[in-house]
Image 1: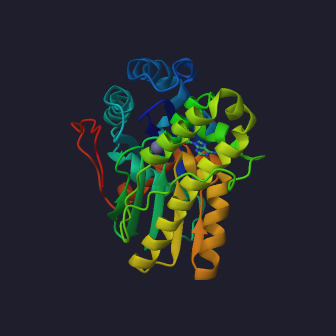
Image 2: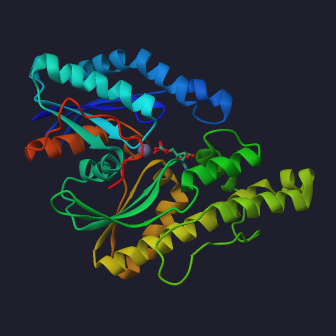
Length: 331
Ligand code: KG4
Ligand code: ZN
């Protein structure tokens, strides 16, 4: 079954083609316009999606070497995300399904992130626990066979990527903040400045990152501009370590509690090498297998949406053409 996927939940316009478990193309056009604003501007995002969506779909088909007439189904992100952005991708998908007479399915963006690992590691099977960490989400999800998902923990305030972005901004490191902080932290000592870890009481699997963000702000105010500039690598490394420690500890606790043998990372923050390394180091003695998608499947992309859509369409699951964007969709 050949499925075209469309992803427009935030500021990446994406389209991809999968044939069974093979990814034939995965085109992502990242909107640069938001860089001037230090964050995504919803109105600009939907306008850019409207401009980019058709060229991106055409490119995905061309790179896959697939004619429209050879498609067997269309999948598009229906939420969560920005309403106007979702509307553009969903409308394109529905129009294609209608005119080509193909089945259509709306895909939960978070389920898409989970499928990045199924796409990258074909033998991988549920049950497993996935940590979805991006600019908009931080969740621990228990994945069972048959599209059954249980959220074991979620952030109570900022998403992990959002914390990276906000701390990078206050350190003057630009947007997006994750890669910038990781780069500066490279030469820093993570033990030089100790920022708080919010474990939120004994057995909670929820997260909170607003405290560590405020702690960085207070630290910078206390030591002043010159000392901040001089010790920037240590501050970045200390912050990164504090966030990674909590993410890793809770992921391992979730795996233990759910009784699974596999843990996965997904989302943009899964690109962080320190997170990947620490999780692998701590999981190994526990006999847990760790999976991460390759970089192009971590950040928002349509390959993961096409894969999740393929799985649902293969199981006979479709959505009506009246499906509306669901900005706050969850599992
Ligand atoms: O999944 P994604 O591309 O978009 C969302 O759905 O949010 O994730 C983007 C987020 C941003 O907050 C960015 O700062 C963060 O992922 N990120 C990273 C790294 N690369 C991207 N965070 C930490 N370390 C990185 N290397
Ligand atoms: Zn995402």
